[in-house]
Length: 224
Image (cartoon, rainbow, N blue to C red):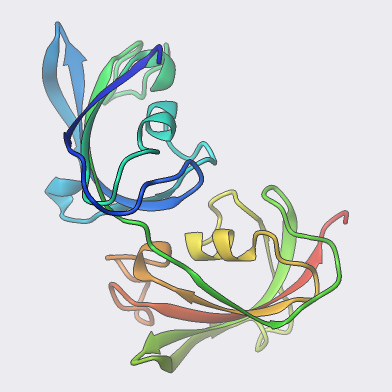
């Protein structure tokens, strides 16, 4: 593929990554100059915090969008990415210069899975990426197979939460779990850490690596 080539150092024996999967990876990126790696500009390995992303939504460069699908969980792949599938003529100053070729070492750690249980099926329009939606929700820490501490609820504020679906405005578990839901539907989402707040947690109420459970109701979709 023009602008992209790759070599697998470890194939891996886990599930195969699809083009629209949510995937958790470790990566290290370098500039590629005169046929070799030069300046390292970013690394999840150095931070010891995996990076989770939803493929197929252009949240990452096209070299990743095209280069990660087909890998197996446990696999390691080196991607050589030309500027046309990276940051182009603009680069990403000050770290990545204009028209830079990049090289990434990628390791696929897991394909985190979201558990969705429909509590009540609605009969309204279907939520799609890009829709402005309104949702009532309550969120708990998920501990030992049951709801633990309640950390937030829109019900106490008396108005639903509005956001654009699939735009990365909320945690990935919401973007994935609410897509395809009909207005009027109530559902329970059990969200693994990689699709929630990950290694950082959030404030005082959500600890690092917390699994979350939300009860959500899709109240409305703007202009539908």
